[in-house]
Amino acid sequence: MGAQRYVYALWSGDINNGFGVMADQCKKMLSAINAGAMQWTMDTGGFRDRTEYPDGKETKIGTGNEDYARWMQFAIFTPIFRVHGDNGIQRQPWHYVPKKKDSDKPQDMKDTAIYEAIKLRYKLIPYIYSHEHQRNKTGVGIVRPLLFDWPEDGNVANNVDSWLFGDWLMASPVVEQGQQNKEIYLPAGNWTEWSAGNSQQGGRTMNFGTGNWENNFPLFIRQGAIIPMMHEDVQYVGQKPLKELDVEVFPDTKRTSFEYYDDDGKTYDYEKGVYFLQKLSVQRTGKTVLFEVAAPEGSFKPELEYYTVKIHGPIATSVELNGVKVGQVANLAALTGEGWIAGKDPAHGNIDVTYVRIKAQAKQSVTLTTQ
Image (cartoon, rainbow, N blue to C red; front, side, top):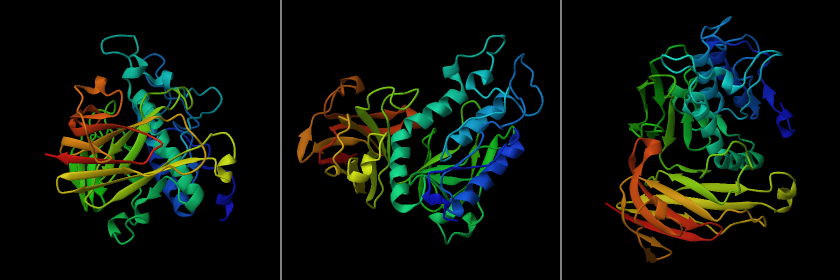
Protein backbone atom coordinates (compact mmCIF):
# COMPACT_ATOMS: atom_id res chain seq x y z
CA MET A 1 0.00 0.00 0.00
CA GLY A 2 2.63 2.56 1.04
CA ALA A 3 0.12 5.07 2.43
CA GLN A 4 1.00 4.19 6.03
CA ARG A 5 4.20 6.23 5.77
CA TYR A 6 2.08 9.41 5.70
CA VAL A 7 0.19 11.12 8.53
CA TYR A 8 -3.26 9.78 7.82
CA ALA A 9 -5.92 7.48 9.23
CA LEU A 10 -8.22 5.05 7.46
CA TRP A 11 -11.89 5.32 8.47
CA SER A 12 -14.68 2.92 7.65
CA GLY A 13 -17.06 5.43 6.05
CA ASP A 14 -20.50 6.90 6.83
CA ILE A 15 -21.79 3.79 8.57
CA ASN A 16 -25.27 3.23 9.97
CA ASN A 17 -26.11 2.56 13.57
CA GLY A 18 -27.03 -0.88 14.93
CA PHE A 19 -25.42 -4.03 16.29
CA GLY A 20 -24.97 -5.66 12.87
CA VAL A 21 -22.97 -2.70 11.58
CA MET A 22 -21.01 -2.56 14.82
CA ALA A 23 -20.01 -6.22 14.51
CA ASP A 24 -18.92 -5.65 10.91
CA GLN A 25 -16.45 -2.99 12.07
CA CYS A 26 -14.34 -5.68 13.80
CA LYS A 27 -13.67 -7.34 10.45
CA LYS A 28 -13.04 -4.03 8.70
CA MET A 29 -10.55 -2.88 11.34
CA LEU A 30 -8.54 -6.11 11.54
CA SER A 31 -8.47 -6.53 7.76
CA ALA A 32 -7.14 -2.99 7.33
CA ILE A 33 -4.49 -3.50 10.00
CA ASN A 34 -3.50 -6.85 8.55
CA ALA A 35 -2.89 -5.00 5.26
CA GLY A 36 -0.66 -2.45 6.97
CA ALA A 37 -3.09 0.42 7.66
CA MET A 38 -2.40 0.65 11.39
CA GLN A 39 -4.19 3.95 12.06
CA TRP A 40 -7.84 2.96 11.73
CA THR A 41 -11.01 4.54 13.09
CA MET A 42 -14.79 4.50 12.76
CA ASP A 43 -17.81 6.70 13.46
CA THR A 44 -18.51 5.30 16.90
CA GLY A 45 -22.24 5.00 17.44
CA GLY A 46 -22.86 5.08 13.70
CA PHE A 47 -22.85 8.14 11.44
CA ARG A 48 -26.55 7.79 10.60
CA ASP A 49 -29.77 6.99 12.47
CA ARG A 50 -30.99 8.16 15.82
CA THR A 51 -31.02 5.80 18.79
CA GLU A 52 -31.19 8.12 21.80
CA TYR A 53 -34.01 7.91 24.32
CA PRO A 54 -35.43 11.45 24.57
CA ASP A 55 -38.64 10.23 26.21
CA GLY A 56 -37.67 6.79 27.47
CA LYS A 57 -38.53 5.12 24.16
CA GLU A 58 -36.16 4.37 21.31
CA THR A 59 -36.54 6.23 18.05
CA LYS A 60 -35.77 4.79 14.63
CA ILE A 61 -33.47 1.75 14.78
CA GLY A 62 -31.05 0.37 17.34
CA THR A 63 -31.46 -0.24 21.04
CA GLY A 64 -30.53 3.13 22.47
CA ASN A 65 -28.45 3.00 25.60
CA GLU A 66 -27.25 -0.60 25.29
CA ASP A 67 -26.27 -0.03 21.67
CA TYR A 68 -24.32 3.12 22.46
CA ALA A 69 -22.57 1.63 25.50
CA ARG A 70 -21.40 -1.40 23.51
CA TRP A 71 -20.14 0.89 20.72
CA MET A 72 -18.10 2.76 23.33
CA GLN A 73 -16.71 -0.39 24.93
CA PHE A 74 -15.56 -1.46 21.45
CA ALA A 75 -14.22 1.92 20.35
CA ILE A 76 -11.88 2.46 23.31
CA PHE A 77 -9.83 -0.48 22.00
CA THR A 78 -9.37 0.87 18.47
CA PRO A 79 -6.28 2.80 17.31
CA ILE A 80 -8.15 6.13 17.17
CA PHE A 81 -11.07 6.64 19.55
CA ARG A 82 -13.60 8.84 17.77
CA VAL A 83 -17.34 9.47 18.19
CA HIS A 84 -19.12 11.07 15.24
CA GLY A 85 -22.57 11.47 13.66
CA ASP A 86 -24.41 13.16 10.81
CA ASN A 87 -25.80 16.68 11.17
CA GLY A 88 -28.53 16.58 13.81
CA ILE A 89 -27.57 13.12 15.09
CA GLN A 90 -26.63 13.38 18.74
CA ARG A 91 -23.61 11.26 19.62
CA GLN A 92 -22.52 13.02 22.81
CA PRO A 93 -22.44 10.61 25.78
CA TRP A 94 -24.89 12.60 27.90
CA HIS A 95 -27.66 11.87 25.39
CA TYR A 96 -27.43 8.17 26.31
CA VAL A 97 -27.50 8.22 30.09
CA PRO A 98 -30.03 5.61 31.30
CA LYS A 99 -32.80 6.73 33.62
CA LYS A 100 -32.84 5.74 37.26
CA LYS A 101 -35.05 2.84 38.17
CA ASP A 102 -38.61 3.94 38.93
CA SER A 103 -37.74 7.51 38.03
CA ASP A 104 -37.88 9.91 35.11
CA LYS A 105 -34.51 11.35 36.09
CA PRO A 106 -31.28 10.15 34.45
CA GLN A 107 -28.48 8.53 36.37
CA ASP A 108 -25.39 10.47 37.29
CA MET A 109 -23.09 10.32 34.26
CA LYS A 110 -20.33 8.85 36.46
CA ASP A 111 -22.49 5.82 37.23
CA THR A 112 -22.78 4.72 33.61
CA ALA A 113 -21.00 2.16 31.44
CA ILE A 114 -20.31 4.95 28.95
CA TYR A 115 -18.39 7.01 31.50
CA GLU A 116 -16.43 3.97 32.71
CA ALA A 117 -15.38 3.13 29.15
CA ILE A 118 -14.17 6.65 28.38
CA LYS A 119 -12.40 6.86 31.75
CA LEU A 120 -10.52 3.62 31.04
CA ARG A 121 -9.37 4.88 27.63
CA TYR A 122 -7.91 7.98 29.27
CA LYS A 123 -6.33 5.98 32.10
CA LEU A 124 -4.53 3.98 29.40
CA ILE A 125 -3.10 7.03 27.59
CA PRO A 126 0.50 6.40 28.84
CA TYR A 127 0.27 2.81 27.56
CA ILE A 128 -1.24 3.95 24.25
CA TYR A 129 1.27 6.76 23.68
CA SER A 130 4.18 4.43 24.42
CA HIS A 131 2.87 2.05 21.77
CA GLU A 132 2.64 4.94 19.31
CA HIS A 133 6.38 5.37 19.80
CA GLN A 134 6.81 1.69 18.96
CA ARG A 135 4.65 2.11 15.85
CA ASN A 136 6.88 4.96 14.77
CA LYS A 137 9.89 2.64 15.09
CA THR A 138 8.51 -0.64 13.78
CA GLY A 139 5.40 0.18 11.76
CA VAL A 140 3.23 -2.11 13.92
CA GLY A 141 0.40 -0.34 15.73
CA ILE A 142 -1.34 -0.85 19.05
CA VAL A 143 -4.14 -3.03 17.59
CA ARG A 144 -2.95 -6.40 16.28
CA PRO A 145 -4.90 -9.40 14.97
CA LEU A 146 -4.18 -12.43 17.17
CA LEU A 147 -2.47 -14.18 14.26
CA PHE A 148 0.38 -11.65 14.54
CA ASP A 149 1.50 -13.19 17.84
CA TRP A 150 0.23 -16.76 17.40
CA PRO A 151 0.80 -17.46 13.67
CA GLU A 152 0.82 -21.24 14.13
CA ASP A 153 -2.48 -21.38 16.02
CA GLY A 154 -5.21 -22.25 13.51
CA ASN A 155 -7.88 -21.09 15.95
CA VAL A 156 -6.88 -17.45 15.48
CA ALA A 157 -6.28 -17.47 11.71
CA ASN A 158 -9.65 -15.85 10.98
CA ASN A 159 -10.58 -14.64 14.45
CA VAL A 160 -12.24 -11.22 14.31
CA ASP A 161 -13.91 -11.42 17.73
CA SER A 162 -10.78 -10.53 19.70
CA TRP A 163 -7.50 -8.68 19.20
CA LEU A 164 -4.42 -7.54 21.06
CA PHE A 165 -4.47 -3.97 22.30
CA GLY A 166 -0.77 -3.44 22.71
CA ASP A 167 1.52 -6.16 24.00
CA TRP A 168 -0.42 -6.93 27.15
CA LEU A 169 -4.19 -6.61 26.68
CA MET A 170 -6.68 -8.66 24.67
CA ALA A 171 -10.03 -7.02 23.93
CA SER A 172 -13.09 -9.01 22.88
CA PRO A 173 -15.99 -6.51 22.76
CA VAL A 174 -19.63 -7.55 22.88
CA VAL A 175 -21.25 -6.60 19.56
CA GLU A 176 -24.43 -8.65 19.80
CA GLN A 177 -27.64 -7.24 21.25
CA GLY A 178 -28.63 -8.63 24.65
CA GLN A 179 -25.72 -11.07 24.75
CA GLN A 180 -25.36 -12.58 28.23
CA ASN A 181 -22.51 -14.98 27.50
CA LYS A 182 -19.73 -14.90 24.93
CA GLU A 183 -17.54 -17.77 23.77
CA ILE A 184 -14.00 -16.39 23.69
CA TYR A 185 -10.87 -18.16 22.50
CA LEU A 186 -7.80 -17.43 24.63
CA PRO A 187 -4.47 -18.01 22.86
CA ALA A 188 -1.65 -19.87 24.62
CA GLY A 189 -0.48 -18.46 27.94
CA ASN A 190 -2.05 -17.34 31.18
CA TRP A 191 -4.64 -14.57 31.24
CA THR A 192 -6.34 -12.50 33.95
CA GLU A 193 -9.86 -11.08 33.54
CA TRP A 194 -9.54 -7.31 33.85
CA SER A 195 -12.56 -6.64 36.07
CA ALA A 196 -13.06 -9.91 37.95
CA GLY A 197 -9.38 -10.80 38.43
CA ASN A 198 -10.02 -14.47 37.58
CA SER A 199 -7.05 -16.37 36.19
CA GLN A 200 -7.65 -18.24 32.93
CA GLN A 201 -5.50 -20.75 31.10
CA GLY A 202 -5.06 -20.11 27.37
CA GLY A 203 -5.16 -22.45 24.41
CA ARG A 204 -8.89 -22.99 24.84
CA THR A 205 -12.33 -21.45 24.42
CA MET A 206 -13.99 -20.12 27.56
CA ASN A 207 -17.50 -18.90 28.31
CA PHE A 208 -17.42 -15.30 29.50
CA GLY A 209 -20.52 -14.05 31.31
CA THR A 210 -21.04 -10.56 29.94
CA GLY A 211 -23.93 -9.99 32.35
CA ASN A 212 -25.54 -6.58 32.36
CA TRP A 213 -24.14 -4.35 29.61
CA GLU A 214 -23.85 -1.57 32.19
CA ASN A 215 -21.01 -3.19 34.13
CA ASN A 216 -19.13 -5.85 32.21
CA PHE A 217 -17.18 -6.36 28.99
CA PRO A 218 -14.45 -8.86 28.11
CA LEU A 219 -10.88 -7.61 28.57
CA PHE A 220 -7.93 -9.84 29.45
CA ILE A 221 -4.43 -9.18 30.77
CA ARG A 222 -1.61 -11.28 29.37
CA GLN A 223 0.81 -12.83 31.86
CA GLY A 224 4.02 -10.81 32.02
CA ALA A 225 2.10 -7.55 31.55
CA ILE A 226 3.59 -4.17 32.40
CA ILE A 227 0.93 -1.49 31.84
CA PRO A 228 1.61 2.17 32.73
CA MET A 229 -1.59 4.07 33.53
CA MET A 230 -2.68 7.50 34.71
CA HIS A 231 -2.60 7.75 38.49
CA GLU A 232 -5.43 10.29 38.45
CA ASP A 233 -8.57 10.40 36.32
CA VAL A 234 -8.51 13.10 33.64
CA GLN A 235 -11.10 14.55 31.28
CA TYR A 236 -8.52 15.29 28.59
CA VAL A 237 -4.80 14.90 27.94
CA GLY A 238 -2.85 17.63 29.71
CA GLN A 239 -5.58 18.49 32.20
CA LYS A 240 -3.26 17.76 35.14
CA PRO A 241 0.53 17.57 35.46
CA LEU A 242 1.63 13.97 34.95
CA LYS A 243 3.66 13.59 38.14
CA GLU A 244 2.84 9.98 38.98
CA LEU A 245 2.00 6.82 37.05
CA ASP A 246 0.44 3.57 38.19
CA VAL A 247 2.21 0.57 36.67
CA GLU A 248 0.11 -2.58 36.54
CA VAL A 249 2.44 -5.60 36.70
CA PHE A 250 1.57 -9.30 36.30
CA PRO A 251 4.94 -11.10 36.59
CA ASP A 252 5.77 -14.17 34.54
CA THR A 253 8.51 -16.73 35.11
CA LYS A 254 10.25 -15.36 32.03
CA ARG A 255 11.54 -11.80 31.94
CA THR A 256 9.25 -9.31 30.22
CA SER A 257 9.75 -5.62 29.47
CA PHE A 258 7.93 -2.47 28.42
CA GLU A 259 9.38 0.83 27.18
CA TYR A 260 7.55 3.75 28.75
CA TYR A 261 7.79 6.77 26.45
CA ASP A 262 6.92 10.47 26.63
CA ASP A 263 7.77 13.72 24.84
CA ASP A 264 6.43 17.26 24.63
CA GLY A 265 3.42 16.07 22.59
CA LYS A 266 3.56 19.16 20.39
CA THR A 267 6.69 19.28 18.24
CA TYR A 268 8.93 17.03 16.18
CA ASP A 269 11.81 17.54 18.62
CA TYR A 270 11.64 13.85 19.52
CA GLU A 271 13.34 13.25 16.16
CA LYS A 272 16.32 15.14 17.61
CA GLY A 273 16.47 13.05 20.78
CA VAL A 274 14.18 15.25 22.87
CA TYR A 275 12.14 12.43 24.35
CA PHE A 276 11.96 10.37 27.55
CA LEU A 277 12.16 6.59 27.46
CA GLN A 278 12.53 4.27 30.43
CA LYS A 279 12.56 0.50 30.14
CA LEU A 280 10.57 -1.37 32.81
CA SER A 281 11.22 -5.11 33.33
CA VAL A 282 9.94 -7.86 35.63
CA GLN A 283 10.46 -11.55 36.36
CA ARG A 284 9.20 -13.95 38.99
CA THR A 285 11.58 -16.67 40.23
CA GLY A 286 10.08 -18.91 42.92
CA LYS A 287 9.08 -16.62 45.78
CA THR A 288 11.08 -13.68 44.46
CA VAL A 289 9.93 -10.95 42.07
CA LEU A 290 12.51 -8.63 40.51
CA PHE A 291 11.20 -5.38 39.02
CA GLU A 292 13.79 -3.17 37.35
CA VAL A 293 13.74 0.34 35.92
CA ALA A 294 16.57 1.17 33.51
CA ALA A 295 18.31 4.53 33.33
CA PRO A 296 16.25 6.92 31.19
CA GLU A 297 17.10 7.69 27.58
CA GLY A 298 16.62 10.97 25.73
CA SER A 299 16.97 14.61 26.74
CA PHE A 300 13.32 15.38 27.49
CA LYS A 301 12.61 15.94 31.20
CA PRO A 302 8.97 15.14 32.03
CA GLU A 303 7.21 16.22 35.22
CA LEU A 304 7.00 12.57 36.25
CA GLU A 305 8.23 12.03 39.82
CA TYR A 306 6.99 8.59 40.95
CA TYR A 307 5.90 5.20 39.74
CA THR A 308 3.40 3.35 41.92
CA VAL A 309 4.13 -0.21 40.86
CA LYS A 310 1.26 -2.65 41.48
CA ILE A 311 2.77 -6.14 41.48
CA HIS A 312 0.03 -8.78 41.34
CA GLY A 313 0.31 -12.30 42.69
CA PRO A 314 1.41 -13.60 46.12
CA ILE A 315 1.90 -10.54 48.33
CA ALA A 316 5.27 -9.44 49.63
CA THR A 317 6.64 -10.17 53.09
CA SER A 318 9.61 -7.87 52.50
CA VAL A 319 10.79 -5.42 49.84
CA GLU A 320 14.25 -4.20 48.92
CA LEU A 321 14.95 -1.11 46.87
CA ASN A 322 18.43 -1.10 45.31
CA GLY A 323 19.54 -3.72 47.83
CA VAL A 324 18.23 -1.88 50.90
CA LYS A 325 15.16 -3.03 52.83
CA VAL A 326 12.22 -0.65 52.65
CA GLY A 327 9.70 -0.21 55.45
CA GLN A 328 6.06 -1.11 54.98
CA VAL A 329 3.60 1.76 55.49
CA ALA A 330 0.31 1.53 57.36
CA ASN A 331 -2.07 2.11 54.43
CA LEU A 332 -2.24 3.44 50.89
CA ALA A 333 -2.83 6.99 52.09
CA ALA A 334 0.55 6.82 53.85
CA LEU A 335 2.33 5.80 50.65
CA THR A 336 3.50 9.34 49.94
CA GLY A 337 7.22 8.73 49.43
CA GLU A 338 9.15 5.63 48.50
CA GLY A 339 7.71 2.63 50.33
CA TRP A 340 5.36 -0.32 49.99
CA ILE A 341 2.21 -1.98 51.29
CA ALA A 342 0.47 -5.28 50.52
CA GLY A 343 -3.27 -5.48 50.02
CA LYS A 344 -6.09 -6.06 47.55
CA ASP A 345 -6.68 -4.47 44.16
CA PRO A 346 -10.33 -3.35 43.76
CA ALA A 347 -9.76 -2.58 40.08
CA HIS A 348 -9.19 -6.28 39.37
CA GLY A 349 -11.62 -8.20 41.54
CA ASN A 350 -9.73 -7.60 44.82
CA ILE A 351 -6.88 -9.92 43.89
CA ASP A 352 -3.67 -9.81 45.91
CA VAL A 353 -1.29 -6.98 45.08
CA THR A 354 1.81 -5.33 46.49
CA TYR A 355 2.05 -1.58 45.96
CA VAL A 356 5.61 -0.25 45.70
CA ARG A 357 6.18 3.47 45.20
CA ILE A 358 9.54 4.45 43.74
CA LYS A 359 11.09 7.53 42.22
CA ALA A 360 10.92 7.80 38.45
CA GLN A 361 13.64 9.10 36.12
CA ALA A 362 16.27 7.01 37.89
CA LYS A 363 17.69 3.51 37.60
CA GLN A 364 15.91 1.36 40.19
CA SER A 365 15.81 -2.27 41.31
CA VAL A 366 12.93 -3.61 43.41
CA THR A 367 13.09 -7.10 44.92
CA LEU A 368 10.01 -8.64 46.49
CA THR A 369 10.13 -11.69 48.73
CA THR A 370 6.61 -13.10 48.59
CA GLN A 371 4.51 -15.54 50.58
